[in-house]
Length: 195
Image (tube, helix red, strand yellow):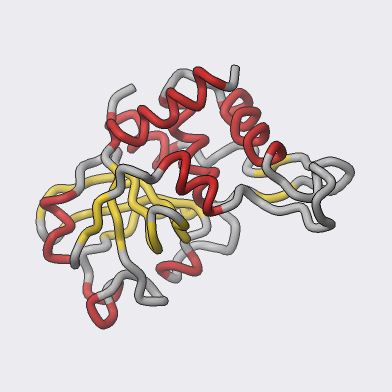
């Protein structure tokens, strides 16, 4: 369960499947948070199928429609993901601090730890001019890849184009980092209490 493993999984193993069967409807697509959880569960020794089952369990258990509280089947709620995985996040003030604050295998989120809007995995953090990420559904945040799909390209987010006006991404959001160790503690805790 090394940081290198999570980083490598984000590069070579698109979540398979990247959907969750909900009660009586077509499978619902993963969101970016679910993809990062999937990779984390694989880094803990699970197969694609086992990781998908863990993600699906969490999503369906918290789906309003599956639990008779509404009509719309949805992906994992951002607030739940924030509570479960993002409490140890530290804010990155700007692109000049990216390299000093990140390492391969860390998880980046946008928005706020209590309600993250996007998750990505740090692939490499080599210098002030080279911090790359991989993710799922990067389209809305950094304009790459396709909606609700794995983005098969590593992106160097030290570039000015990713920091319009000094904030991160297309919508000018705050960027936060969760260390690999802190994220994996949360993943292990979930695994231990939901077997």
